[in-house]
Image (cartoon, rainbow, N blue to C red):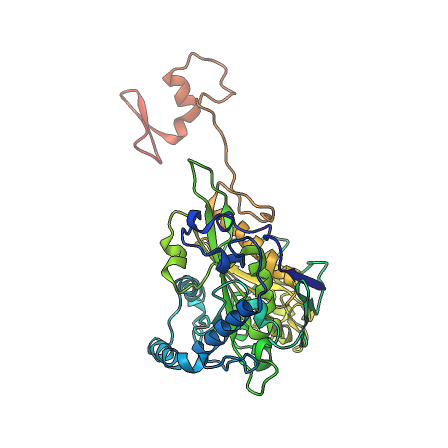
Length: 450
């Protein structure tokens, strides 16, 4: 599939609070439009060489702060040497709290810890604590290609620098989603048109997703040097769930964290081009938990892991056909041959979520459409729980029966007479009452009813 990411124009799915001027932004009053969606104050993207050079230096400094090799193709001059002491100090302080997670990741981690508590896993499953954070718009685009050169190729993607921006050709072009949506058991009810996966299978898939092969972690930005950077990249977005109703309701949005192996950074370039970049998740001004007026209270997480396609049904803990339940047989959650790959080796996404409003999804393909659709799905999840909102992908909503008895509740329709007496009440309802000699009855189940 050819997917061009253009440099002109405002993304049409941009949350409304990014469309305002920086000084009048809803949600976060201090949103920097340049950092969020890459627009200059004049309203266009700038390609001036000196601005790009500053951008590349910023990326190298970010790599150094993350403990990764910097890109030798960038002419940094004395910049990195000058900042070396500051970077060393930052890294030394970071090592004092090696397992620290930003507030959004802490909320997701709490969900995972609670969700897997009954499995008694030998080792806890933890989100990456050290990632290359895409803290402003445009970093992902530069990271998806070497700074000197116009192409990057791997087993799953071919990327090119073109006049309009960049062009990414992914390995697959998905036109069908049949059998692709799997939901882990243990949370909310699973619709019949989705495949129900055992919780233990999701746990083992997540463990593998958090440990990708080194070649998948390799950043295209540094791929042409002997010591390339190998790391996870992460992104924070805040898509709108419920638009503002002036004078009644402020805009409501959710938080979603993306984690991708370094070689798949182009996927996150695509995502921030549609939904914007919500900044560094470690900064208090970007913490949804402190923005009580605009946060729905829901958190999402998406982890890209195409290497999961190699895993077999047996190693994921699925039962043999003879021990499988009726639903497991219908959803193909069983194995007959020990070498059978999960989902027949075809790409899929698998989700775990519950009524607390946290949703975690693993995607086993770098097809860009999967990432966009998953954001829309998670917006739907938040909209269904939050209420007062609906979304085009809102299929599979959790629904409950309700009845309207009207403003007045009268006698049943089979009682025609309007001249009622206690003798009639005894004949109709005597079996559920303890009759009293004084001429009244007490309900046997609810004695407060006379």
